Length: 361
Image (tube, helix red, strand yellow):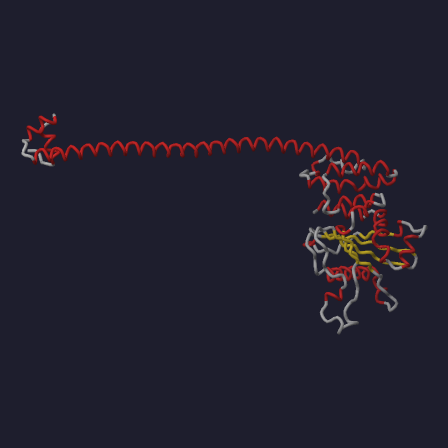
């Protein structure tokens, strides 16, 4: 989030880029007096004053940031307050938050005016509130403050009535961003969510732009390109913060692109090698486990077979013993003497008595 925030703040903190942003996205919403001023040939970047201040509470700076410009020319003084909304979820309290930020900006104006703010003639400057949203979900929060307050129809005249201007990057078509063929459109395209292109395809597109951009536009693009390339590199798993200190500050777009392409190729190559090594180790482990399982299965199978065989053998032996017992008993029952039965069967007299179930003396 910090990389994205730094990239946007740096881009909009550049007066030239802010002026282009103003003309492209806010011209239709500006009062005629402001539009005529910024479109006039004698309008100067000196008429834009970047205010070094933020009104975002510390606990919300992970999700949003802001940029404040003052337009001052002759008797005209107005502010453009841009809230940069990074979080993926929609903040439905946005009308209230914008009002609170505007009030804090007016508080600052009163503080700067000092004692003159107490005069009857003192008036606060107008503020154009803008939400610049780069999240992936559709923005569904209301924009009119009155829509966030109950029973406003009954309390008309008592409830602040204003609307913030929404610029949702996800809702601007890629071709519309790129059609002007300038640095601003290229950078916003790089930040646009839902791009299907990988880093190498984006890199090739940028190189095509560089071939046709005039030198001034190339320098403007390179001045801010580094922050956006860092965001894209992180999506590929590359931590561009480990790059040489001046890599993204040298204003050479080709150098940045070449460096990150090499890093991504190296990262993917090392990832493949690491994946192969892990795959081999996992394969060996799985093989050992499968071998143990098969060994246990074979052992159980052999044990069952041996058990059946031994059982059959014992059964046959018991069967033969039973036949002998019955034979001996019949012979003895017919009146034969033990000695005669022993002689006929070729057993000892003791064995005959055992088969007959008699106790030996």
